[in-house]
Length: 113
Length: 113
Image (cartoon, rainbow over all chains, first blue to last red; front, side, top):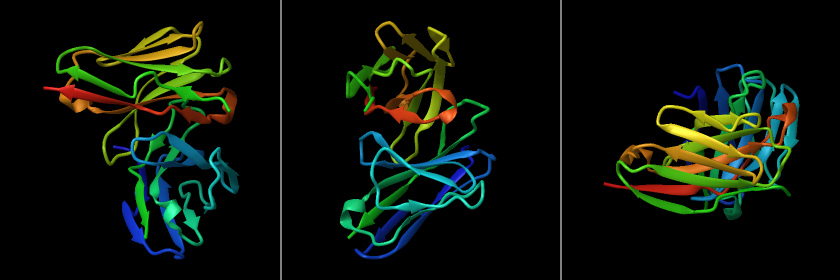
């Protein structure tokens, strides 16, 4: 079982609302990531963090923001949701020392109406 | 930028047959490669990895082959089972301690009973 948790699993929300997608991991991993994935498509990195108080934008431009105040917590926020934000958001973490790739959460399926 | 791509978007095999999923990568500096399996409604799961100083690595029913000369990666699944039906992604690490993975498009493996 993966020790990385995302909530909510599904979210339907109206345009203009502010939302926060939660991601927590209990493995003590230093690095965390957010990917955006449309159905059947590749994963696009939108944010990553190499440790507390460290955040970087990924390869795909995103209007979302992230924070990393604690090692285990990496929430993603959309200040004003739009239909173009409809997608699946996957959170992942990794341990540089282990070199075993990423552990992914189950994802949040976001629909903006 | 650099990208990882898959030759076949869909692969259909009979139960019990062996499956081979291929992946081409373009960054010769990549030093670490991973195969992930993603079932419907779930996040990607780690299957097997290989470092660039190896040609082959075997796991339980899975084998990854790396050909650095032609920048090609393959995943072989022996005695394919219905539970193997999923989308398979290859990912490459550009190198160093950044541990930043780039994912390919994905191949849908459909196992016919």
